[in-house]
Image (cartoon, rainbow, N blue to C red; front, side):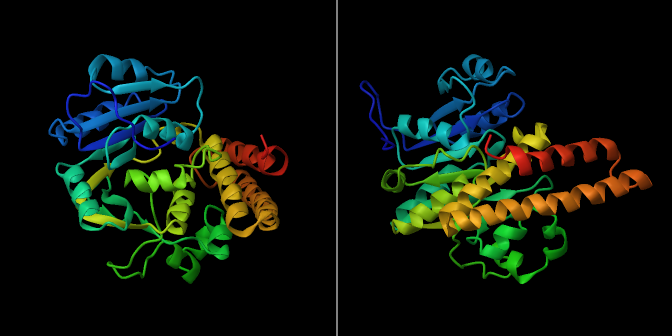
Length: 320
């Protein structure tokens, strides 16, 4: 059951809950939790679900943030499954679900909460994202078309970046006040009832696409989503996923195949897997030519090895 629960002996109800999922996040979790506590006025319940980190993340939370509720999983069970654990422990509404490398700006929590109170149809609200230079990035996205699903994340994206298919997916030409289909998941605030209606995240996604799929479920259940301009969050991006680029790419495409099957059926998911595997052969050949010519990345041999490992996985190991 993903509905917020009440704890016996709770002195006073918190006005919101925050669920932070961590994995190898020792370098980021401190700033994340400090920002949440500073913006809470003592009325934010914070829950950390650690996916069995080996870098001291959980120990840091226990030592420096004793008021934070901490749960450590028996293994790395993935983002959505860990988030569901935190959601089940939450006692307040709304519920923020955020990455360990997301740092909320002052006033963000109150602005998100006020937006829910003003619009009862909202199931999810996201703050505006700030990049490393302080520039604003909208987390608003459109549901992918078949073309976007084929191009996004493959080498075709290099040539089709300005195409209508990807521009529509990224909402490059969308009016600022247009309602988005889904929101990038670095920091999302959910109405507890909305999460209860759809059952939370699909735990079958290990990483990537889980928030897109959740927004599809929310839309089907009648909920909308929005970006709150008065709330802002700084997001590093890829803090835990970026260490192993091969694993990151495997996780991305494994989730993409799952999403494709749910949106367009298993035959299209099989086609997409074969198409991506073929494109990866071209990608590998391109990198080998660059290696022979001494061009490309600073470490062309390392890059070629990485692409080869991903290509082998695309053809023979994608089920594992």
